[in-house]
Amino acid sequence: MTRVLLSIRNLRKRFGGLVATDAVDLDVVEGEIHALIGPNGAGKTTLITQLFGELSQDEGEIRLDGEDIGRLTTPQRVRRGLARTFQITQLLPDFSMLENVALAVQTHEGHSFRFFADARGDEGLRARAREHLAAAGLAARAEVKVADLSHGEQKQLELAVALAREPRLLLLDEPMAGLGHAESEEMVAMLSSLKGHVTMLLVEHDMDAVFALADRISVLVYGRIIATGTADEIRDNPDVRVAYLGEGDA
Figure: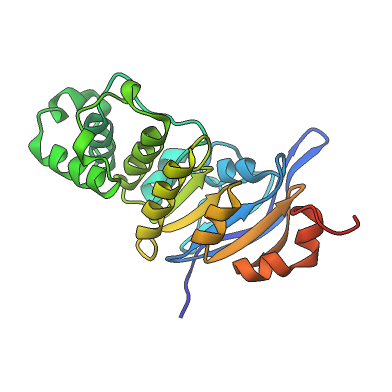
């Protein structure tokens, strides 16, 4: 029996006369990778930002495992099990990969940031951080500073940092952005390995990656979801073909 982990109802956000999200209804089932696609300016990142609590909604309801989280702060949502990656990575450039992940482990366990100097020598934290780096395929370069990493490695590291928080729902904002073909294939393989273990809402423009990864896909156009279905159903949907895939007479 499928269980809805994230439920969004009638979510709306306006910026003056611009409607960014327009009566959005969306369910994300536990264990699935649910992709959110749409043209530039459709409202995808705005929706993710609302879910993470960095932008308040004007109307609507956001429920995580039945709990209304729509008025909670971002830290409160993180404690409920949300984690997020960004189009542009948000890492500590002067720290090593291991230190970045160890900090995420430390904060997830409820320690203060001011104790991080001690965490650098905490073998328990470092061991758990190494496990997350190994899952991301980065164990061999654990001591390398973020500033010395390739863009693809930084993307992988950001995912490892998010996973270190042991999220129930991972919000992925264009993880393939700026990656080369080989790096994209590595990211797809990494995300595929997490299927069934972490529920994911994936915002992505790389349609090859979307069709390879997603259990279901929702299409957002002008702030409104116009279709939800499997990859085959989305490919064959005439409204999607006209509005997003650019086919038809319209």
